[in-house]
Amino acid sequence: MTSSLFRTKKVEQSISDTEEPEHALKKSLSALDLTVFGVGVIIGTGIFVLTGTVAKSNAGPAVALSFVVAGVVCALAALCYAEFASTVPVAGSAYTFSYASLGELPAWIIGWDLVLEFALGTAVVAVGWSGYVASLLENAGWHLPEYLSSREGAHGFGFDVLAAVLILVLTGILVLGMKLSARVTSVVVAVKVAVVLLVIVAGAFFVKGDNYKPFIPKTEPVTAGGTLKAPLIQLMFGWAPSNFGILGIFTAASVVFFAFIGFDVVATAAEETRNPQRDMPRGILGSLVICTTLYVAVSIVVTGMQKYTQLSVDAPLADAFKAVGHPWYAGVISFGAAIGLTTVCMILLLGQTRVFFAMSRDGLLPRFFSRVHPRFKTPYRPTILLGVIIAIVAGFTSLSELAELVNIGTLFAFVVVAVGVVILRNTRPDLPRSFRTPLVPILPIVSVCASLWLMLNLPAETWLRFAVWMVIGFVVYFLYGRTHSRLAPGAPEQRVDDRP
Image (cartoon, helix red, strand yellow):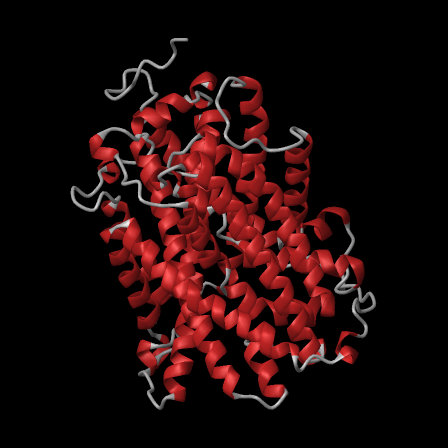
């Protein structure tokens, strides 16, 4: 039984599965498309919201350094993702990579984790988008009924129709094809980046040097507590990290890490890329570099425009311009935020459907969901199913406390991918690799340590919820996935892949 739990799916078999007509996705994406996807999904909640939160609560003007730290952690993982995505150009991202290196059970665990990560990420961002759009409509004099815009509607009941409609519309776009999705994303990303550049260029004229003093505020320890809301590292070792000071920069990095979530979604589109060996590394690394640069620039400008203690938590960029006497910019920035969150939702939904599709094609989930649309060549069944479910969840449920699950899920995936690179280098040194992660195994080990450090800075209750989701995943795997896998003995679709 132990050997069956860690049976690996050879890279050659994974690639050959993509050539089956009923499971084949259309290859239509270029390096530019991938970079646009990456920028589209990364620039969103982080740059429009988190800057003020972490500057005010953790790092002060040094929040720029927190973005650098989080970006470095992502860059370490990105180098590992780039090798895997160019070597195993198959839908599924970390799930597929784990199947080729660590075995079936670890692959299932990471796939199950990614489904949760992308689902919650999509729902949370859709709710944030709804808030921005509702605000814009109110400014224009249009007010939605409370029961269609609030979860606190009449008699405690409400349905966020804006969030639900957004997800359903994006689901339809994804069903119609990747090229259409790429075109829509390109237009939206262009608008979003233009707004971000506007903030940087226009805001630079209102920067005051005194607002940067002190750049790293003095240490103010968090009061140690025994609640589940405390960082896990605090409960484990009995000490509390600092709100400010050097440790505050790292504490803030674990929060602003949410701003980078999504770059790994680029890897899920490997199977739909025309030249994945060349274009996947360019798309992954290029989008990460662009977004990190923009994050650092925006945080420097905003903390220079307004004292960090006075920054808005909800809309720091817009309110910073109001503080310097230019409220007109606030409307433009709110519009850019709404536009930006649209692409984040679409690409997170894209990533989830591709992981679900890959797991279904391998038999770990019902094979019904592994059929592609005969005309559009997209995995329309899981796209429609997941789109409807997430629309309902986003409409009825407040997910603010669950958002941190997205962070821990992504960091867990980073750990698995880094370990997988080392293992596959040793077990399959013969595989052609158009991109090779440098300094193996040193760099992957550093990546694992950095990801684990940020995970330990997350609240203990986040770990508890994550553990519950993993337990559910184990139950599903042992009741269904293990016996229906294409690698299971006697499975109808099993291929002879044990020959040399």
